[in-house]
Image 1 (tube, one colour):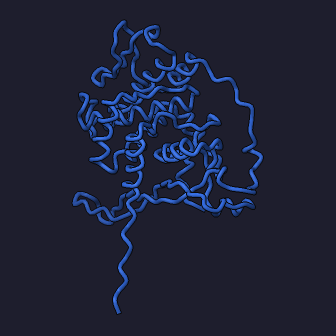
Image 2: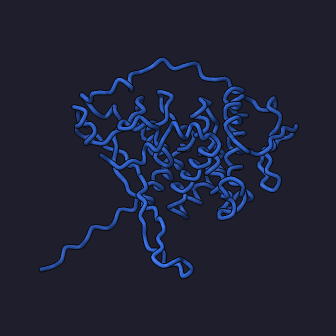
Image 3: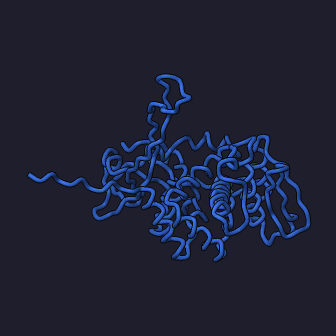
Length: 311
């Protein structure tokens, strides 16, 4: 009797990358707006906490494409556990979480019986609350009156105040904004030179995200290389981290950040993504770590929603 062939293993990273590439080629920069119409990041129905990492972008992309106003997402089983169901014909959205495995450390220099932690990506499917019916919504999810968004100065002040041991910041009359790892300093044009306050905040948040790569913080540049010239692979990698980080900081503080959608930048990202299926997932992880380093209070409040295993 012939042995039944095993189904090919699902390549989740390739699926995620293909989805992002499709959005970019269609004229949408997926990391430009990670919040929903309700002004909230995508949120786990089971925990009440914001999703993190690449899940923020996967769910935001679906919400934007489908016009979902609810920030809440749940599994098929969770809908049933709350007395309802997912409507017939609805399609779910892929999210991922990391399971940490302990494996033997085969490094010759390692001690006998030593182990190391190896992250293993797992995935499951969730649905927006608007894709369900008759689900009993907990009182904590009742709509609340949204406070007035803070001013740009207040939002910027909140971020800078939360960034412990951050880089120095200087303003000069110029047309350049950059972070210099050698002297750990951000240089920006004078705020009055920006067309909008949001433009100033977006640029600052972008450079602050870069600064988390310094050896005294997340030490990202040692492995990935310091910010490089435009068009290089390393440039595209680090710029993607900075763009995602800036958008996350904007979502946390209520600033409608402005993502660079210049055709040359999009082409640069596309080239890097098509050459590395793990890039966008990795960049989202690094951006999340950067935001957690800049605003640790926000990270504590968000918890680890979105990385819990499906119920």
